[in-house]
Image (cartoon, rainbow, N blue to C red; front, side, top):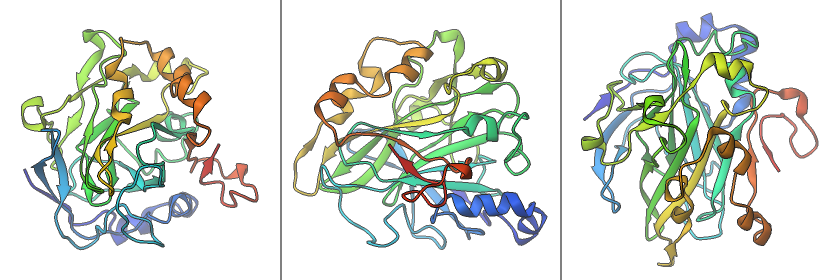
Length: 309
């Protein structure tokens, strides 16, 4: 299973991009690169016996690492870069636009990464800031060190949004060996759950080849537009499994949503992280990364693009 991307955004595509929107893309993150050369992705096995998409050594992909410190092994309690990549096309062998958002949760902390206003800006025509760039469907995938997850469909380009994502980061002695997705069908009945996991050639991945859950609950665009809540925004939950750089077992994967009884969409939004974790661990915080509201800049957040609370 191999996919090759010739370009993330061609010079012609950049030239055709409205200046204000291109500037917004460049403000999002120091990890955003336009354009990017070829990228290969191959499937490999990890300790959890789930397949994961892992990049080979290619031009243009240096991994999801700290741009200042570079590569660092994963150590429990230490900040570790995790990236969420949005793309307007699941086939990386074609020209595409993408946006890379990054945050640094503490390793083995159950974390929530929220992108405020993402539904309105990526899907809804009411706000319409990025729909001129992210035309059609929108896919997302997670990265850490040199590991990639399979892609997940966030918006099908028509009437459905799949906002629920939990990344399980697999680590062996401090090295990220893969990223798998938790079961995203725990918030709905079987009639509202569809397969939404894709390879990097744009083809849907089966449960047999991915060796992990491949479905997700969807919400209709109409329902999302009528809701006053943020339940259709992109929200990435992160848990960890395996061993850190000191050989210690990572435990946070026990808190993934599929390990608990089925919950509703509202529960997902209201719960965020388990209350007992918030009460006993002040260092575990929800993280909002907001590239869509530059008006909220302050001294600690001069660009308005990244905010931790």
